[in-house]
Length: 116
Length: 112
Image 1: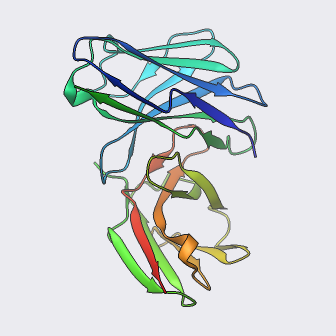
Image 2: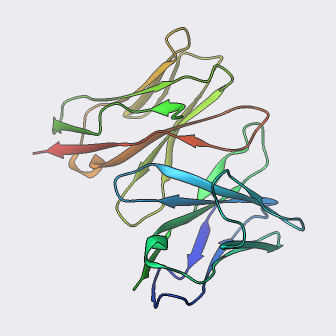
């Protein structure tokens, strides 16, 4: 199947700093990528849909000024957590959509963010 | 509003036996269902899927059953192996939207 990478795999930062997470589709082009967040023992919650060349579509309750998404190319989307606080600590996962009858998504390995 | 529910947060099964993971949904517009397996600190990996026009799909040890009238699907793993121990998520989507709606997950523990 298609491969999606994320960088970094884990990051620890101080409160108030900004953190950028990259999501790359390695062997295919993805016009659409998705960003999810997973709290401990909870489901994956879709944060936003990232479309190449246009603004991201955010889910209800997700602050777009807090979680900046840029889909700069067909293989790269970035999520920047601005002015991170401890409550932003979570596991962030991206996925990339492969065009097809059911638009299958392939997931990255995730990024563990810990804000001190 | 949880449109996809997995009511069993955990399940323990003996190696070699059958594991049955259940999933219920409320949105009748869902027309494609997927099961993902997830290890801690990793992204989900796709296991098996089923279209709403089918009631069964089988792939090796994994079989997914869909009961549209009951809005219920299940994943059967037989025989269960220790390496199957993970969290399993069911997910659903509609043909007009690419957004996956995930269930809350079931942690499967396969014991020796």
